[in-house]
Every structure is written in structure tokens, then in C-alpha cells.
Length: 322
Image (cartoon, rainbow, N blue to C red; front, top):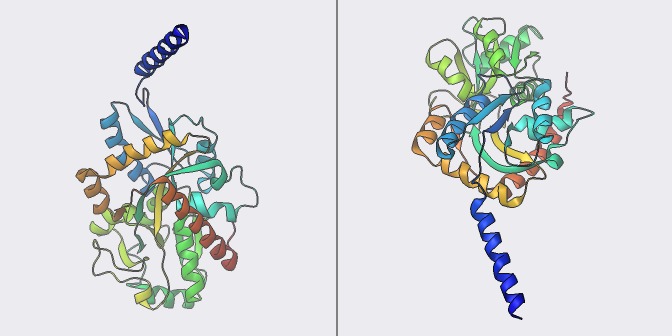
């Protein structure tokens, strides 16, 4: 009996010692994969959040841009990573809920191969044009497109992403023909829009607002159900003669599916603390992003609902990856 108790005490002491020696996560840099080139909205949000996390951890949160194939390359890289908490994926509506309906063969299934951590932000989208386009509002764009079918072009971050969906939704609902010019991310999409190589885009205020504020691009309409506080004079697309039109993008963090529940909860706690900091919230809101910070269960349910929603949209509009 005495030996049994002694053995138990020794075992507990050894466990306690081992636990005390277990280093606090993280002990090395954490990688946040972004499936687009630097400069896009997802990249900007990931860097703001990563900087704050790095300050609290004493370890870097490094943004790893894995662009290509409308986000499929970055999504696969995240899904194939070790489930140890050191690789995160800042996904978008397109990466996590749309692409699987656009491609006949996907190397990974986001619903199966990735696990929700937190929806970080909801992102207001805006329809912007190069100043050379003779259109001051959505009605002007529709009139131009009907007079010149297929000749007015718009850029996007790639097939299937929210900018592409925004353009195709307008085409479908307004009965017009716009030419889609896909890029490998919002960064290069805006480069050509600013240069006048394309006329329009439908993208996040995070990306577009600095150019609107500087007078380099014209804001024609916001894509959500209500006007943005940053652009109070800019109407919604629905207000502009296309009733029922609505699109709001979002960015969220996921990790490889085999990551333990306990670790995910720990990571979510760190993210929640970072998003609660006034300087982080102010930066994101100033760019047209609403901080969400939902828990893993809420984000998982949200992604399931979004997947069903966009499966229907893609099917009805007959949208395919180009």
C-alpha cells in the first residue's frame, strides 16, 4: 500500500515537473499563410493582426504569401501543414466557401481539411472605377455596358473570389455583359486599375479606400446592404437601381483539421485579445473592416452556411473557374 502511494506521489511529481518545463506556446515564429500577393486586403489584415500577436508572444507572426490559382495554392499549403499551431491560414469567403464549387477537382476540401478558429473581420466591398471611365454611378455603368456589351472590363483577384462574384452578380441582376479580367490577387488587380488598363473592380474598402481618399479612383457604390461610415455619400448598389443586390466579404483564421481542440481554444484566445486592443480595432475599422472575433464553433457554423449559400449562387449563375 505504502509503495503504491509512494509510486503515485513520485509519478505526480514527475508529471508536474514535466508540465512546468513545458514551454509556453509559441516558442518559435508562427506562420500566417495568405493566398494572395502582398498588398491585398487579406494581406493587410493579416499583418496588422500578426504584428499585435507578435508583441504579446515575444515571437514573430510571419505572413507567408502563397498566391496562385484563386487561392487554391495557399489553401492547400495550409491544409497540408503540421497540426501543431504554428501554421495558420487567413482565408476568405472565396478560399473557404466558394472555390470548391468552381473547380471540378480540388486538392483539398476546406470543410474537411481545415478547422475554424475565428472569423476575424467582415469586409465592406465597394465598386470603384478609373477616372477615365465616363460613369459616375451604377446606372451610368449599366447604360454604358448595354451600349457597349462586352467592352467594359473589370478586374478581380482571381476566378471565384469575392471581387469576381461581385462583378458576376451585377452582370446577372442588371442583365449586362462586362468582360472579366482575373489577376493573381487584389494587389496586381489594383495596379492595372490605377494604370487605366481596366475600368472597374469590386473589392474591399481595406484595399480601395486609400485610393478613393486620394482621388485616384471613383467610388460608385458600396456592395453591402447599407452604406459605409467611411463613404456616407456613396449609395449601395441596391439603392442605385439593382434592388436585392448585396455582397459582404469576410476574412477568417483556420488551421489544419487535426489540430487539437485545446490548442485551437488557446489560439482563439490570443486572437480575441489582439482584436480587442483599441489600436487594432481602430486600424481595421478605419479601413472599412468590422471586427468580428467569433469563437471556433460560431465560425464553423458560419462557414457551413456560407458554403451552402455560394454553392447555390455559383450553380444558378453557372460560374466556373477560368
